[in-house]
Length: 227
Image (tube, rainbow, N blue to C red; front, side):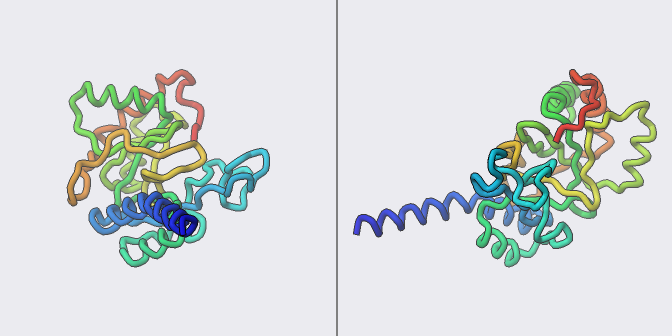
């Protein structure tokens, strides 16, 4: 009897631990109307030999292990609660991927050191910020949806845009908390406000200057593309 009860407890703990991604995905999809899908995730421990837990995709040199769509592909992103429940019931530890652009949030990301510098500068300016996603290597600022044409116009006006600054717009994606990917745990550096309303997002133009400046003044001059 003790052995059976022990198995039941472990099952409940696994189910509870795996529900965090499902809860996050449902909040994004149903409360905020952000289209999501499960990311590829990490390979099982030892599956990649000496490399440890690499990406579960077939590419042994994957640059963003665990942190990209694979099966299903990005076009499958949805706000349908039934589909979201089905995905994360079958893959409870799968990363939560946001399909950026169109009516969904976009994002700008930069290496973590430059990201911290940019947030300090934006705070000093008194600028209101939206949610900020952080991994051990990169920080991403969520912004209101923008078109590629508008982004091109903004970038054309800059003397120099560092290659370490990345843009997640239409046709792109971003991994959201509480996912775990190859670089480590994904968390909120600036969490969305509590409540059912979709988080407020700043305009891309309002934050772009500070992000470019922070990347250019980074120790490597913003030239290194850090995933």
